[in-house]
Length: 366
Image 1 (spheres, one colour):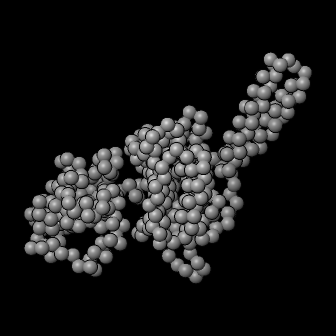
Image 2 (tube, rainbow, N blue to C red; image 1 turned 180 degrees about the vertical axis):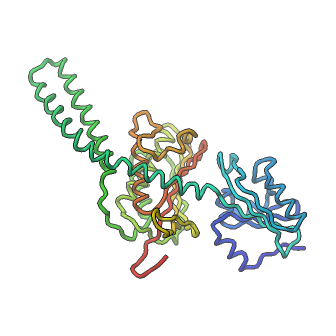
Image 3 (cartoon, one colour; image 1 turned 90 degrees about the horizontal axis):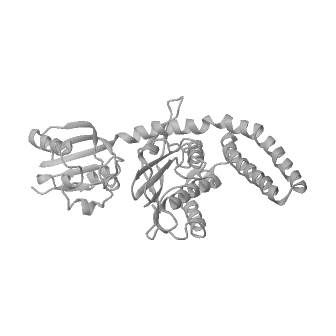
């Protein structure tokens, strides 16, 4: 019997945010929706040349699920299965829902629900809280440390006129170190700024183009940039300057991870529209839609696994000279915009993904 899906069925499956595959006789892939293309990082045309066993780890229970559905003609579900692989990443935990396709006795519809989406949102709230937890610390540092440092630096400058050239090196060292501490305190002080910023409709692609130009004229001149944009992406509700700072931070981190001497360094900037992702607002029953996705992907060595879960916490860094505040500030700014940011990393594929709400005109509802 030939395998057919009606145009309405295809449209319905394509708008689903969860990956959907239709598997036929011999476990050959017969259909993949757009979310499945993203999940498996392969086009639908290429997926349809493969068998299910080519996409998932050897011996995965998913293979048995498909056989059971084909044998019984009834739906079967399995929870918390790891589909992690070199293709998909170190750990991809999913719930799998398998059902027979009424129009084809051999066909099985597989829907994958990533458990990590909900878990990532929970972690993001933790990241947001961690960033805001140092708000009071920032205010305290500004008052209790910057003022004394100013006095120390002034005293060192006064001493320079009454000491030998050899000792003057020590006073210069005092000045340099106090300046370095002041810069660190000023970065922490940003967390204490709770004033509401102006928000407007922001074109994400304008932000990314601006950041790319800055990078290519400086720290990223040795790196190839690739753009995969959804040209129909609607504007985001945000502060342009803050979003530029966030994206510049992520792109600079990616460039530093690749390194100055890499000969094949590549940073990929992506945008996409992902309907169906919502985040519950803490302390209320409201749920905010986060359909706008921005990605920054690099082919550097990756983030150490033991740091990945704490990457957005303050003072956590992989850099020898890093302060550990850049990504914490990213988490705070994106959190203040009502969005979330997450990182997935394996060697030669580190992807920072930001989800943000749409800009809503007055009188418009989500």
